[in-house]
Length: 231
Image (tube, rainbow, N blue to C red; front, side, top):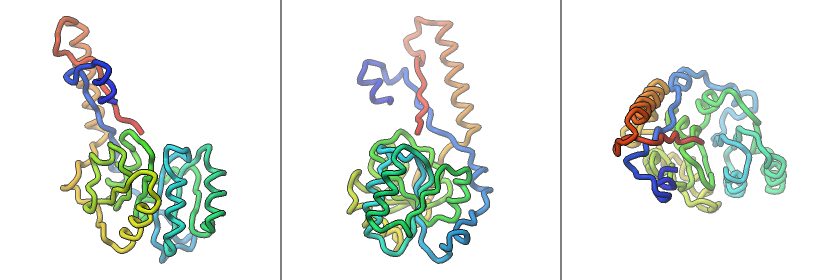
């Protein structure tokens, strides 16, 4: 969004980007989901994907890749207009016993506590909350190479970055993750997601600057716009 504004003539000095914030305590204090026992997945390697079931999210690419991953289970949490088509794709690929469409869930932190790897194969994104949440849970991640992901994922350190729309690369990445070649998140490698309290402080600070600017409209250094990166 910032790049688009700059291209349309807004000076960089007049733009403040406020990154998404999450409540880390909700994730740190979450109890593990019982889904492994409920679905008889006690010994399975679990990949988790979270997001709306729409073309943007690239779940069709993930299913194509997962057809080449014989010894794992994929949990997909989310709902959307593509669900029927994606379920049909899973059936056509003989994946119905290894892919579970969970629908909308209110226990994402608990699911992340029992997952082995988080996957986000999106075609495009802003700064995805679900990715920040997975990193905050110290989950290894596999993510497509949309620009925001490159800001917080370091390939081979806390996750694997793959080209968008590339099912072969995504399948290879899942094998790497299963073999343990990507460890848990090292918060010294990536920027730590900010807490909600800090996020609110930033918004309040920008509002104060904007109020000051309204009092002194001639000021060339006033900040004219704040952007919150959203999913």
